[in-house]
Amino acid sequence: MRVEESNLQRGRELSLAIMFCDLRGFTPLTERHLPYDVVHLLNRYFEAVGEPILNNNGYIDMCHIGDALVAHYGLDGASPSRTCLDAVRSALLMQQGLADLNRRVLTEFGISLAMGIGVHFGTAIVGPIGHSSKLQLTAIGDSVNVASRIESATKDLGAPVLVSDDFLEHVRHLVKSPRAFDVELKGKSGQTRLHEVTGLVMQDPVLLVQSTLAEVARDGARFGKRFYETLFSMAPGTRVLFTTTPLELQERMFVEMLFLAVRSLSRLDELSTGSGGPWRPARRLWRRESAFCRGEACADRDAAGGTGAAHDARGGGGLVRDV
Image (cartoon, rainbow, N blue to C red; front, side):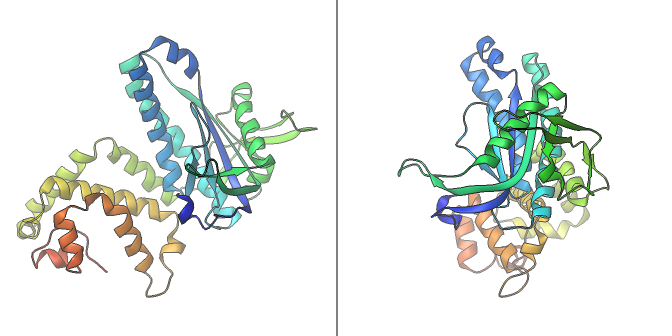
């Protein structure tokens, strides 16, 4: 989220779910591998755990360095219950993403990565902070420190995901929490109750779809290719609709649009409202997110007013119909 898009240019106090995630044992790894391998592995890690955050209305705060990752939920003004559920979904999918990554990392590097996730719900000051040439939207305050301390406790308590009592209050009926701990957090007086989160009580359709798409993400190109092969075998007449767009580009666009649709699942209330009809927000979102395909063919297509199959019949290229 860029500062100019955030509506938080002057700083505000907001109620947020704040997540800290830290990679275990990464420092020794940096001493045993080449710099190229370290950077490559770290970027793969951030991709694996960052995608669930972005898919669930989270904002990744890049003001923190090294192998730590900080995310904030609630910047969009959502209710505390939805904000905390978004954070829970993210944490569960981040664990799945790391497990998937480890299957490849173990083969390539002979190591297995581990992480701890701590989440707290509370108020924080949010705004653009930094040098004038490099402003970064970030959150500061005691709640941020508490989230960091919770994450630090995950290792000693043997619980990969820990949340505060203030956080659990908003999703208590939705999550599985087999253990609770009363601990002293650094910088806090008295005992703080923390809760382990291991899953959701009931099957969650959004989590299920996002988990399935994670499988697709491992080989998106092959999935897109297979989709169009199946489409053309079942409906040969559709092939003519894609004659002006290179099939490789069409396959990429299709997979990217699937990712966009899945990311939108966690904010259906947002996408189903708005002036000018229920689908206008979704259409705006699609146009913005699909900017990567803006080659000459796409520019011509948009200028003509079409973005999908309906326009393809008139000489454009693409699968999605402009609604």
